[in-house]
Amino acid sequence: MRGPAVLLALGAALCLAPRLLRRLRRALPAEGKAVLITGCDKGFGHALAKQLHAKGFTVFAGCLLADKNGDGARELKDMKSDRMKVLQMNVCSDQEVAEAVDYVKMTLKDPEEGRVVNITSMLGRMVSPSRSCYCISKFGVAAFSDCLRQEMYRWGVKVILIEPSNFVAATGILTEDGIDKQAEVLWSGASNTVREDYGREYFTRHVATMKSFVNSGLKDMSLVLNDITNALVSAHPSNRYNPMETYWWVRLQVMTHLPTAIADWLYIPGATL
Image 1 (cartoon, helix red, strand yellow):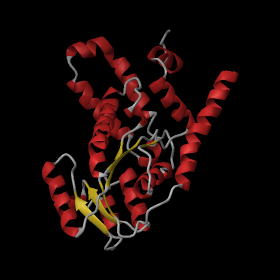
Image 2 (image 1 turned 60 degrees about the vertical axis):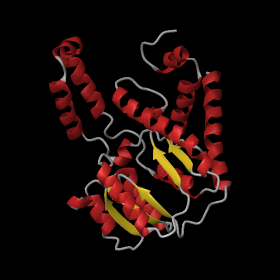
Image 3 (image 1 turned 90 degrees about the vertical axis):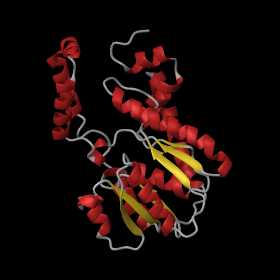
């Protein structure tokens, strides 16, 4: 038991050290600064828009449902603040993104060099069974951000990555109804070969597993919000932030640094050395 205990203690120290160092770093003033945030209808985006506004930022809050008077967009509009500007922005629409960017450019008379902060997940650097689609999307954002960071050095633009652990309970990103609807789409769209190979029982079991995640993870999103804020206001921000419990931080290091066979053997049921 000494080995795991020492590893856990070391992991805790390494996990806390960057956070303590960030507190000692000089913070830039928020007044006069502006930030464009996507996904402000709910979850991290919505909460971040309110937190940064409270700190003095001018916030351009991009909302998918702004044109439909969605709850999140309406709440931000009801703040009646000149520093809270709600924009219609579906990030899958090139036109809406371009219109939002043009609006920001017209509003900011003298834009300064800025920062790009992207949110992925711990599953952007390590994988987990039955989450291939999710992991692929997060790996893609992480790779894009790493490339962009290297490309932006010459212009002095910092590109920072936030890699949270499980905050499903805090964000409400999963619902049982939503899982049922997606499951029906997946099963009805599966080929006969896939249905025969996996079987309905296997599929139903995994749907139940997904439902068990609805209330899982941390219920307080302040770890994520504070790391994003630090990435924006710190004079010397980290390239990566890992808002997560010590257990997940240690597991992330194991899965990304140890030989694959050993890492799988430690964490994945059925894996052998």
